[in-house]
Length: 326
Ligand code: NAP
Ligand code: GDD
Image 1 (cartoon, rainbow, N blue to C red):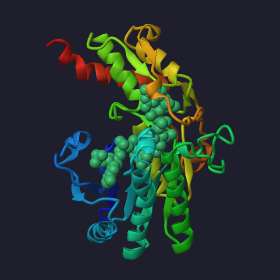
Image 2 (image 1 turned 180 degrees about the vertical axis):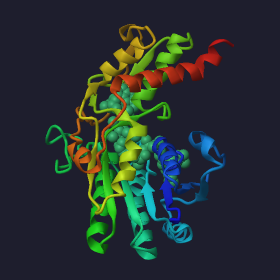
Image 3 (image 1 turned 90 degrees about the vertical axis):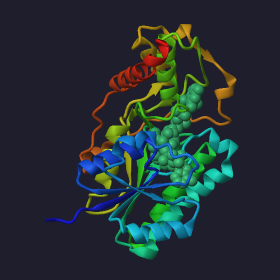
């Protein structure tokens, strides 16, 4: 019998970490998740997995803890998903975002270099790196032009991954993922803010929904589909970078229209524009070209935009319904 492969996931408590842990368990892996020390331990997204995964403590800000962790766990694959991932916070905490989202990547890579260069590494890169887009649709070769401290930090993370691959012959890949969402998405991100708002309005718990730029366009997919692409990248013969996207784009307004319609509501009656949610520099349009992923990884997204919105609205209504009957 083949020995079980071990995967170490940083950011296992996040949206993607929880879906990736489920996928790797299904694939027969021993799954180890790194969490940072907090005074209260709330791991809502992975509560259903706690008996099947191992949780270890570590922080991307601390090099020695990362090296010791990699040495102790001896994973065959490392998925570096941990990051300060909310774009607006990167303007209010630019240095911390850089420490974590940029230099944190070097810390993990260097830990691997010191312990065992045969460990495969996945870096969670982002379409936010394309920023003020230089080409449409965006593909692996499209030049980056980040528009936020977060985007700048991710560009660093991307290139340090490429550099360790080329310097030390490591199997290190950068997955350039476009926005992906689910009912587990943080409520500060626009899709979940909208579906949570729709549910509250439908249940009489809220009257209005204040949003920022309704004209921004994003290529939105389902997180459950996207974590499969991460795994596939590490199962290839050689390390390469891939764009993961649906190839379709929609405005925030369009997302609102469909999400409110899913609860038989007209968004124009409830959505108000609020300057507080506008950004100092915006990414106006993202649309990815996933043809390399389709050709090499045989990856195609399975969930449509409409199905994604429908499942998110239904999940938020089901979650909030008990509050409405109090
Ligand atoms: P998320 O829900 O915000 O999760 C982020 C994770 O990082 C959480 O587990 C968080 O742990 C952890 N983390 C934050 N600061 C940490 C620290 N100092 N030490 C250790 N862990 C820390 O993000 P996501 O949507 O799952 O995204 C996963 C990754 O993909 C991120 O790197 C993100 O930037 C990138 N990405 C996401 C998308 C997308 O559309 N979702 C697209 C492209 C790239 P706590 O629970 O302790 O906060
Ligand atoms: N968050 C938020 N809140 N965004 C709003 C709002 C609002 O009230 N109103 C409009 N928007 C617009 C933003 O200006 C942006 O253009 C778009 O909605 C999407 O915003 P977010 O959902 O916050 O996501 P993001 O695109 O900035 O970043 C996400 O995707 C990246 C990949 O492209 C994050 O998950 C990043 O971590 C990820 O790398």
